[in-house]
Amino acid sequence: MTDPLIQLDCVGRRLGDSFTLAVERLEVFAGEILCLVGPTGAGKSTVLKLLSGLDPPHAGQIRFDNVPLIPGKWPLATSRRIATVAQRPALLSGTVRYNVEVGLRMRGSQFPSAKTTAILDRLNLKAIGNQDARTLSGGQAQLVALARALVVEPDLLLLDEPTASLDPAYVALVEQTVQEQRQRTGMTIVLATHNLFQARRLATRTALLLGGNLVEIAETARFFERPSDQRTVQFVEGIMVY
Amino acid sequence: MSGQFLAILQLSLLVSGTAVALSAGLGIPLGLWLGLKRFAGKRLVTALVYTGMALPPVVVGLLFYLLLSRSGPLGRLEWLYTPQAMILVQTILGLPFVVGIVMGAVSAVSPELPWQLRALGASEGQVRWELIREVRPAMLLAIATALGRSLSEVGAVWLVGGNIEGHTRVFTTAIVLETGMGNFGLALALGAVLVAIALTLNLVILQYQPRAAS
View (cartoon, each protein chain N blue to C red):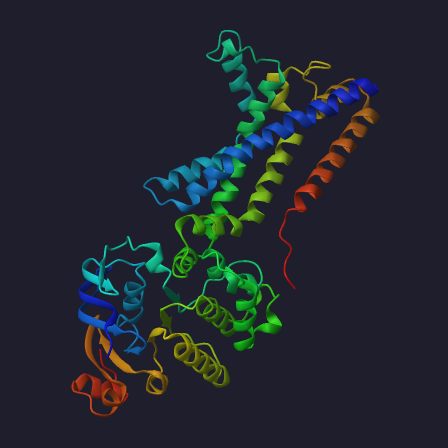
C-alpha cells in the first residue's frame, strides 16, 4: 500500500440528538477503491461528507496528503482535488452540457468543451447534451452528476450510491468508465453503496459501518469470505444488523 | 396637446424607469442576501417584506407628503411636487416586490445545490454567482412587477407630485384628470398608450429571460 491520500483520526460528528459518527481511524490509500457498506443510516454518507471537507467534524482531525486540515477551512486548492457525487443530484438550470462543464469553468480549465464532449460521449449522454437538465429522469440526472465529477479528473472521487437509479446496462457502463479513469489518472475512489455485488466487483477494500461506527475494514476478498467481526458475517449473509 | 403628450410620456418613463432601476438596484442584492442568510427573526422580516407588497399606495403617498412637506422632517429637500418625490415613493412601493420575489426564488433553490457546487470545487463567489444565475428569471419577474406597479400607480404620485402640467403630470394622473373633466376618449387613449408602453417594456425585459433548452 502507498501512503494514505486522506485519513480520519478520532473523528466524530453529531447529527441531531440521535446519531453520532465516531471513527477512530480511517485511511484511504492513493489509487484504491474503498467501498463503504452498511445499513441505511449507518453513517456512510456522513463519512463521505467528512472526506469532502465540506461538513467539518466536531472532533478529531482529517489529513489530506499527510497535511492536517482545519475543519471547515480547507484550502480551495485541496477542495478542488476532490469531487463528490451526491445521492440525490441537484442540477443547475440550463443544458446537460452546461451542468457537466460547471466544474471545469470554475477551475478556469482550457478546452472545457472538448473534455465535456468526451465524457458525454463516454457516458452515452451526447444525444441529450443540449437538453434542459431539469427535464431529466432520475437515472439521467445521476449520470450527469457523475459526468460533471469525472470531467474535472479529481484525485479523490467520492460517490454516494451513484448507480442507485440506473438499469444494469448503465451500472456496467458507469463502473467501467470509473475504472478506466482510475487506471488512466490514478484517481482514488470512496464509494458508499448498498449493493454488495458492486462492492465485490469494484472495491480494493471494503468497510462496514454500523450505527456510526466503523466495524471492520479489510481487503475485499477477505471482507466477504473471511470477515473477522461477527456483525460483518451477518451483514454479508444478508441478516439485518444495526 | 402633442407638446403636453410628449412631456407626459417623457416624465412617465423617467419616473418609472428611475424608480424601477432603484428598486432593482437595492432590492435584488437585499433579496439575495435575505434568501441565502439564516438568522433569528427571518420569519418576521419575511412577513414585513410581504406586508410591504400590500402597502396602499395612497397611504405611502400621504406619509411621504407629510415627510416632504415644508414643516416635515425631509422638508429641507424641497422635493414636494417634484419628480424626485414621485421617484422616491415609486421606489418605496416597488422595493418590497423586488425583495420578496428574489428572496422567495432564492429560498426555493434546492438547499443541496450550494453544497454540491462546493463539492465540485466552487469558491464561495462562484457558488453565489451560480445561485444568482438560478434566480435570473425571478429577477426579471421582480423587475417586470416593479415596472407594472410603477406605471400603474396614481394615488401616491398625485399626492407627492401634485399633477402639475409640464412638471409632474404622468399618464395615470393625466387619465384621472381627463376622466374628471369628462374627456373619456382622451383618457382611454392615454390608457391605451400606457398599456402599449408596458407591453413594449415587458417584451424588452423578456429578451433577457433564459430560453428553455430543447
